[in-house]
Image 1 (cartoon, one colour):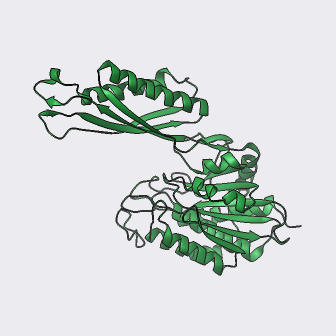
Image 2: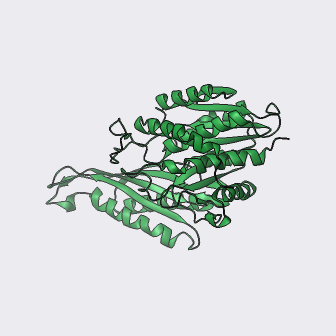
Image 3: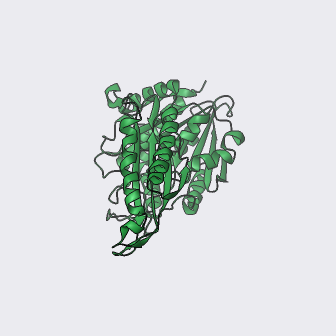
Length: 390
């Protein structure tokens, strides 16, 4: 099955929604304008229930099928937040807010779910209930967890949940996913090394935190290569190192930090413990003190087997060929807070091609509006197949 014909008629309207959201990006939980726009559209298209303020600024819509919503309930999720970066696309609908940009396509995800909602509210060619989840703060704010903590799965019955993310470099009529670990956990660490400062001409009278920190960085690189099994996946990246203010002064302290990415909970625990051991050991060897702060990030995004198999079948129908769906895609070390939903409910996360565009989180990135019919059709066909009308 190709994309749904009705979506060709709706394409301009959905595109206009997308570009308006793109023009007014909002980060983390500050999605006030976006959330208000989403809620207004849901009310105008005849969604049965619209709830706002879920998980701070999240929006939930409910569409009941022809049987009044009895029986199964499936949730579809879109993220709404932008990134704290400046846009360089030169588009006529480019961001009007310096330092904020939709560089990950969440504007497209939101618009596609709105288009899906409009179609399903018009046709209601399904039995059961559709829960539309419009989520803030995917980019580092754990908005999924905030919505769950605010009753997403207790206020509304959810039997399964599905999400979709665009993928630059992949043709727009192609999809990718896999059963099991699809995306990595995303933990963070901050290390403050406490040395003894002094004159740069007399380093022997100091405990130089720059030297200690440099050795910490080097030692951390051995964890993946010498502590983690060669068939497992892990990344330990130091992403900042701040110390000193002058050429002739050895500073008292240095601050560095970074991220740990894994695809396995046992490896995640092992690497976190090993990072702490390495930091403590290197600092102790040099007589330096250390403060170590570790922050648990998103869990591994782990797709459920049955739901992944089903989602792959639907994607193949929309793409028009099983060859256009990679059902054993290579896992990515990027993170995604959809992982929290999958810890609580069965479901699957799918990637959809965005064509030949700049990469995610790049200042020249833009969501490909030609992908809209594929994303909407995927969600619609998923609902109509999983909950067919009697």
